Each structure stands twice: as structure tokens, then as C-alpha cells.
Length: 176
Image 1 (tube, rainbow, N blue to C red):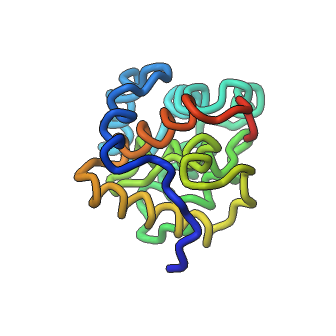
Image 2: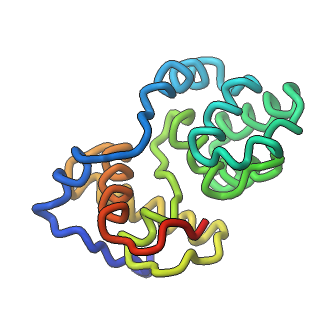
């Protein structure tokens, strides 16, 4: 894998940023996460809760998805052995782009996946949001997993550290 990432956090500061995560709580998603992993799909209300947590402005589009469609798409995503299918099929849902699809995988899949976010990408050396595609997602996921091993942390902790560093240091507040 070619390294396109440049971690801005000093190794000795990683845990500090993870522990000082200042975003809305994700505790509300814990029960939902366990339920989705057990059932291997999301109900419409569960789907809407994750989408709202990740990107509240997507709610009008997310509401357009039927309960059955959400159940079918998320079941395929949560049961396939293909990482590419797991992420890309979620983008078929109205209101779901790569970042939201990554949040669904992060909270609902039995395997660990990072959340794709402009803040995390800033912390990894991107001043502008890159074009998302599967190869970028694969490289990003591999790099975040490497960070998890390096800092003896799960991907939720990695995500929190990357997000919080950007929140403290990134000048513009929104890119995607």
C-alpha cells in the first residue's frame, strides 16, 4: 500500500486527543450497534439514528428509503465478506455518501472499520477532501487499522483522536 497519509498527531499526544474528544456522544449508538450486529441488518429507525448522528442534514433524503430497502441493503452490507460490497452497497441508499456509509459500518459491522470524515482526513494530511472511491477507502481503512495497532487502540479511539486533533487545529469548519 502506498502511504498517502501523514499523521499530524505526535505519538505522545495521541491518547490526549482521544480522551478529549468533544463531539456529541456516541453512547446513544451502543445499543443500536449491538442490535444490528445481532440481527445483521438495520431497521429504518436505527438507520435514521446513525445517519442523523453522522450528518443531520441528510435526514430528508434518508427518510425517502423504505423500511424493506434499508433492511435488504444493510443486511447485504453486514453479512458480505467483501469489504468493497459492504461499503459501496450502502451508498445506494438515499442520503448515504461514503462518510455516512463508513459510520454505518463502523457502528454495525462485526469487523472494525473507521469513520471517513473530513476532520480525520485533515489530521492525516489532507487540506481538502479527496475524491472517495473504493481504493481510497481501502487505503484509509488499512492505515487506521495500523494506527490502532501502533497505539494499542480500537478504531473508535483512533477515530476520536483524529477528529479531536482537527477540531482543535483545523481552521475551516466544514468541507464534507
